[in-house]
Length: 332
Image 1 (cartoon, one colour):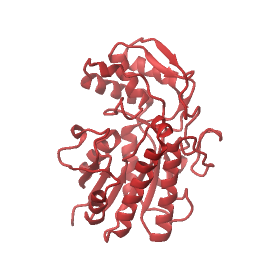
Image 2 (cartoon, rainbow, N blue to C red; image 1 turned 60 degrees about the horizontal axis):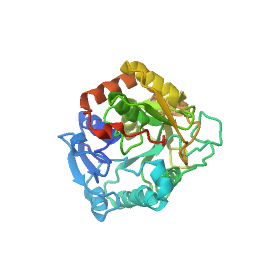
Image 3 (cartoon, rainbow, N blue to C red; image 1 turned 90 degrees about the vertical axis):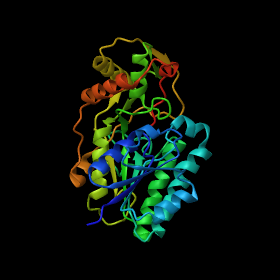
Image 4 (cartoon, helix red, strand yellow; image 1 turned 30 degrees about the horizontal axis):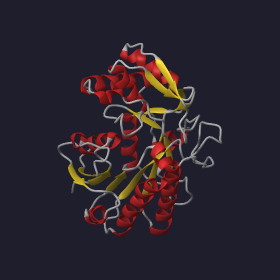
């Protein structure tokens, strides 16, 4: 029996590197596509092959088309809401054109890998419905980032229906955990960790009462593996093959700060800054569909996940000035 082959875009990043570890452990041969704009070579497992490529490039398309892959996990993205507001054309170029470049390569490939797409479990829904959001809830994204993610979901539904591609969408809530980049990925838990370790106050934008659904990266990786292997419903409407991946529990930024301070044994003060444009106020998702159809549910509590995250940052953070970077706006 031949070894299964997987290609992971964004595999040098936070979530992607954990997915690479898990797929290697499951017996896959793993190829990583990453332009290293925010990811790190150090995150890529030694057993994986790194291709330093932009997902919009002809070279990335050729690799996907001719690589005889069984699985494409598409995680690469411009994922900062603030940057999408400032430069929506770049956001669309990376997040929409990059995805289309890969989907056309999959369509043209004789091997036709399954596509697992990382969407967002907050930004596609917007603030105009009462959470927890179910997959079929109205979509009303309030940022170019959310608009781009939803656009790719529509393209995936089209490619599944018209061209028979094997696609699944995982709408991640706010993922946190070891290896999260506090400078480029807008991960509030990781930035709080850096501030605590630097002995600096925790900066919160807005009143801190905005809620998010914080899910540990290990649980998200399990969802990706399930999505890679599970039977899929027949292609149809937009949401038929989409699944929320979160905890179903809202946590405010202030509650997150308090929980992390308990995990770290610290008592840093909170500083407030003006609200950021494009930031949602309330976001958490229903995970009933993933539990019912995929057999997936989270297993790591917020407290345990924050302890693991802080312990990792404590072991990997120096006292350089970068550790004082203020908190980015939340983007999921």
